[in-house]
Image (cartoon, rainbow, N blue to C red; front, side):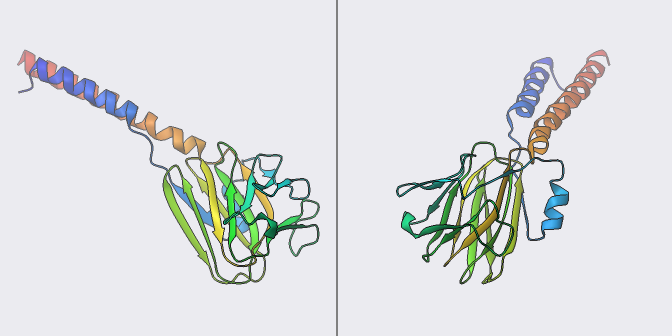
Length: 210
């Protein structure tokens, strides 16, 4: 039989857990632009413009959106913008790392989705974190423009693309993906806690009156 002294702390604990447990972040990657567009059709994307990005030898290229593209080893002299490319860059340009290092990309705050095309002179790895959720995608020698997209339920602050002679084109970012999923889980937990509160309260009343 549950005593009143026991029931009250249990109910309080259930409510507290429902409020403080964070939602687990999830990430989804896409190699098919049609599938990515379908999954993100309600979102608004900002196009990175490499032609107007500001270059610094110390930080690389900074787009008006706040996205920063640097050489992984800070050899930013390897970065070259071209206005003529194989995919859809015009009038936004493409960015190439002529070395063998690859890119370190820092995204603006609250980015939940991004997509781009890339090609390279060898195999490539794309590695990023979404609120601590590690994701690594290897691409085997994408010599022609290859699509890569990702959505996450928690913000992605940045990622790296390692490989030789990487070219990035048609880079887009959005702050809208996954927000609803990220916020829904705590409310589900709160709802579950309230249901348990009611059930435990009813049980306690029955035991008290029996």
